[in-house]
Structures are given as C-alpha cells and as structure tokens.
Length: 142
Length: 237
Image 1 (cartoon, chains in turn purple, cyan):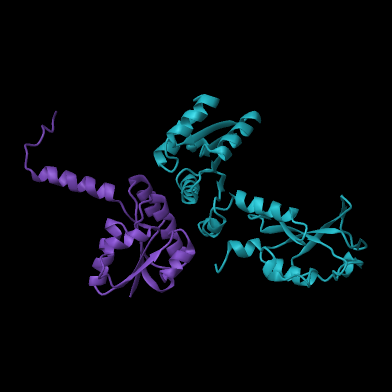
Image 2: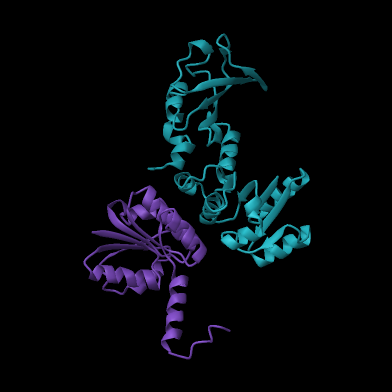
C-alpha cells in the first residue's frame, strides 16, 4: 500500500511517520535534501529529492504504484497543480492537497480536488476555543 | 478590448506597453514591491494593481470579471497555471494566454487544459537551431491548439528528394509540403515543382511526425542529434 507525500516540512514529515506506523509504504519528496532530518534517522520509508512539479521526481517516488497522494508543499499553487497531475496523469483516486487560501481551497474542491484548508480549520478551532471559555455571551439584540 | 496582465516583469510590462499603444485598455498585476514601484514610476499607477495575482480577490479587484483576455506571465509556472484555471473556472474569461518558463513544464500545462501557451525558451532554442549551419532540420513553429508543427528542411546534394518533383514524393501521412525557399524567394510547392539541392522546404505536420519525416527526407542524419520538440514536451508522457 504505497503512498506518496510531496513536501517534507513539519506536516509532511509527521504525516509520513503516522502513515508508516499504520503499515503504509511511504515515499516522501522535497526539493531540499536537508528536509530529510525532520523524518528522523529511523524512518523506514523512501526520501526523494526533487521538485514536485517535475514528473520525473514523482516517478522516482513511484507515483505509478501509489494508492494515495498528499500534496503539502509550502506553496498553495504547487499543491493544486501536482494534485491534478496525480489525478489526471496517474489516475490516483485518493488525492489530498493542503491549500492555505480558503477561496482557492473552495474553488478547486468544486472541480473534484480534495482540499484541506488549515486557515479555515484553525479559524473554527480558535472560535471553539473562545466559546469553550464559557465567557458571557454578548447581547444578541444589540 | 480589456486585457488583464499578471506579472510585471519584462514580458508583462512590454505586453502592456504594446497593447496600450494599440489602443487597448489594460490592467497589470505585480506582487513584488520593488518592481511595482519601478513600474509605477515609469507608467504611473493607473491600471497598476499591487498584489498576488493568484489570489482570487486580487484578480477581482483588478477587474478580471470583465476581462476579454487574461495574460499570465509571472516567472512561476505553477502560478501561471493556477491563474489560467481560476480565470476560466471562476470568472469565465473567454481567452487566456499563459507563459511557460521551463519547457519541461509544458506537459503539465497541456494536461491541465491550459491550451494557449507561449514558451520563450523553446522559441529561442528553435531560432538558435535555425542559425546553426549544420542543422538540416529546424523546428520553426508550434501551433499547439491547431495541432500543427511547422518545420524547415535543407535539401542536400545527397537528399533523396534532390532533383525530384513534388508530386513524386511519398510523404508520411499528414505531412504537407507547403513551400520551397530558393535563393531567398519563396515558391508555392506545386506538383510540377522540382526540388533542387540547396532548397529549403517548409512542411506542416501533426505533432510527433518529425522522426518519420526525417527518416524519409534526411536518411543520413543521425536521429539522436536532432531536436524533437514534441518529444521534449511529452518525454515519457
């Protein structure tokens, strides 16, 4: 069960370890060779250096064999583009892309990309955290 | 026409200048502060918008909703792709032209439905090849949407087509021998036209037919040394 993750930052590297723990076979790619250190020395998956936009990098991460693809580089536009490559070129049905901008996250969700928007999620979390303080509610009639 | 240009580099700025001279209304979006200030100094701030042209609200502020044409010419290919997709999907812009910075990204533009693309690197490469005296096969132009390639072939003394009439030439399917350039003059290629050594032959062909045409036209040429644009574009694709 092969999964490809593009972007080995705090999120990508942590996700890679989580998926490995669940028994998945993971390849993670990043344009910086230094990103490898975030994975830890004992990471059993593959680490590929290259730009996510290059099809060759995706192939080196064995995207042809992947059942799932996660795009979490630091660029919204890169994530949206490579998610579409995974879908259209390699026919992967489980494709998830991180998109910080809520407007683009919503627009590209409409054309079938499974977008996760941290901005929207954090807004909800912060709102819930404020509500959880059980402070007095403002006067609704005002 | 109202043309919205994203990216105020050399390409974007010169496009804007040219279109304004032709009497079109333009707006230019630039996100780098120093570049924005420089352009504002040169052109004034009319029709200049500061912001990230891949943000939907920036595009809306720049008037994309009424644009007849959007030109995406930033230095990042992923940004140009997203601008094109947002323009079509979100705002229904009738026509979009996108710049390809790295020719290796051309297959991605094609895959994601960005049809109207311009690649300066590929265009320059073709022009340079054209100037190389040893190159007998030159790719002149790609009309991507029309799916037509225009190539030029130099007829050598040993070419199988030297001293042959156009009507007697057995070309690969889909290849059109359009014109012959002889001593600086273009001739329409008619059936009774004889091809002579030293002639340049212009052919129109569907993408991917170059190799077949070369085999017929330049059997002595080593295929590895010939630049195939369509193969570069779809390498293993």
